[in-house]
Length: 450
Image (cartoon, rainbow, N blue to C red; front, side, top):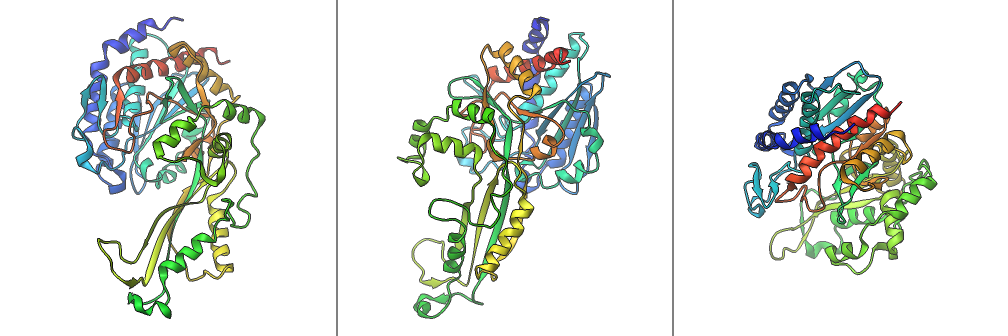
């Protein structure tokens, strides 16, 4: 069936969609600061309700979760996951326009949340509205889940999820929050995310800091913590925590073929970061395979002693460090945390304490899944090219909650320079419109899914 009538409606109504996005951007829903999350949830619910969805706001003990349901009695069901919270906008002085005011320049919309991820919420809801207003019957039921703490590790999402498991039953496929085109202008699908375990260690060696003249005989907390950190990996990057690699699922032939075809732009990446070679002597192909398939142990931050301007000769009494572990299919963050604690104790670091930790498992949909094929067909119709596939993102998210119940494909209307999480976050208006057309075409493809 030609979708020209719906596409035309989308074009005609783009100003209304942009107006809704502008109102959404004006809500500074920064989950790291726990600010305006209720307001963002209420706006999400309002958008859903105005466009024909049965809507609920679920309390979680933290940021609310919003669900929307459009049940037309169809055999199959499409789910859409998004989040209404954003990253902090600081440093404000690097923004060319106020971060919480939608600004349009040179065909782009600027503002915090334009690309991650308020644009997709507005885009996807407006797409469904256009389908209905074209007088067509939906070939699938549609469910929305919009949370408000994704940028803070979705720390209360499970509090909702465990109470509403029936909402996730009999879902045939889920469109995830992010995605877009690559540097060559081709759309990319991401079929999974790595899991994460994030830990803050600390160690205290003395009751007060000391003059560094006493370094001959007094303990240094910073040095003590560095010793512990250095014990986590060998010189080749192998993680030494016992049983760390035991449960990792073997990469399939099909996934490896997808990875080998993927262009991760090694030359441009090295130029961007100002490096001549990859870590551990990896060549370009080895680095690409590692990005998609290998777990990591990474020092994110370290604090000890004097950090101000100039010198201060001091022995720090205490020190702390933040470590993240990116995890691949079948690794369990709770199990790894337990083994990490035992490893430190067994190696003489029982004085290190865990100030806090959080994390969640990885998730992955297989490249030959029927829902992946459906999305690829839709992409071909809208963009007239084959979608590029990333088998797994190097980043993390709560996809496992959904991926345990349904196939998940992350796609969207972003582009390589959206500046997500950075100043001057933006999205092209044309991509925003094409994103609506993509959702419409995915829905249309459900007609052919027997």
